[in-house]
Length: 82
Image 1 (tube, rainbow, N blue to C red):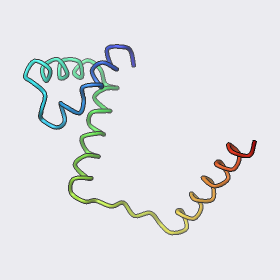
Image 2 (cartoon, rainbow, N blue to C red):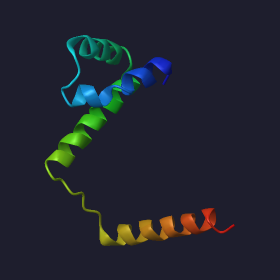
Image 3 (cartoon, rainbow, N blue to C red):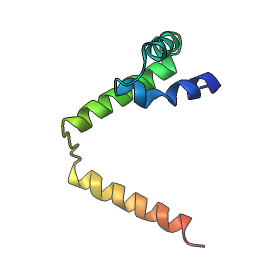
C-alpha cells in the first residue's frame, strides 16, 4: 500500500461511521474501485464493526485456546528474558 492508501485509510473511521462528507465518500469509493488492497481492508473492517456492534463473541475450541496461550506465553518469555 502506498502513501495514498495510508491517507485514505486514515479517514476510514469517518467513512464507516457515516460521518464522512459526500466529497470524502466519493474520493474513498473511487480509490477503492481501483485498489483491491484497500477494498479488502474496508470490507473486513466493516464486517468486524458490524459483528462487534451486534455483540458477536467468537468461540474457539478449548484445546486451541490452551495451545494459543502456551505459544503466547513462550513468545513473551523469549522477548522479555533479557
